[in-house]
Length: 104
Length: 113
Image (cartoon, rainbow over all chains, first blue to last red; front, side, top):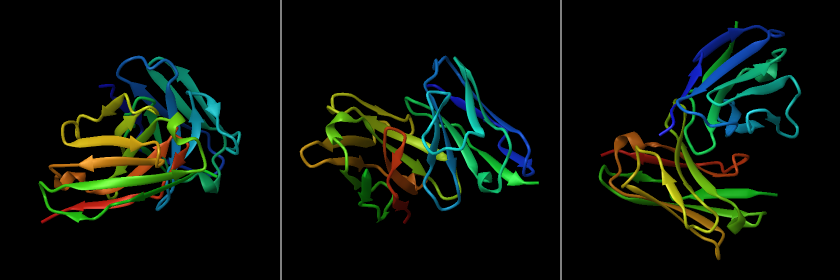
């Protein structure tokens, strides 16, 4: 099975900061990767599909990149609404462990 | 509008069984692969199982393989998850998911004596 390793597990940042989350696959998944945002008590929201395609309605400060085994989610300027937990998922199943973005 | 409504979550004994259902509406159900994803209290997301639109192909996480069975009834627009030999570590909210984008609200399964 493909393992997904996400880092860091927790990230403390301030409004306006540039934030980067990394996800590594144990074998190549080309660009079959999704990124989600989950807020407390809510269902996950798909932000990015196929590694870099921004979903409709998602602010342009979110971007995804990468292929093969290494991927990144970047928030160019962190906003108050962005404090949440973020997950990567390879399309055939496995999720990363999650990254909680906290207020510094 | 896509709607996914899970049901069937309950308190179950260890080694017991449950069947979850997910009623779908707002899209051509048989055209989409469907998945179950779970989230234990305070923990991360865990993919459980996926079934293709025609129900020919299924896949399972190692943690549930041999104990859980995913199925679907395309005539009823309904997805199922049969869970046998339940363990305390199966305690979680179980979500029905379409195409990564659409998630149900979840149904809570608690496994405890």
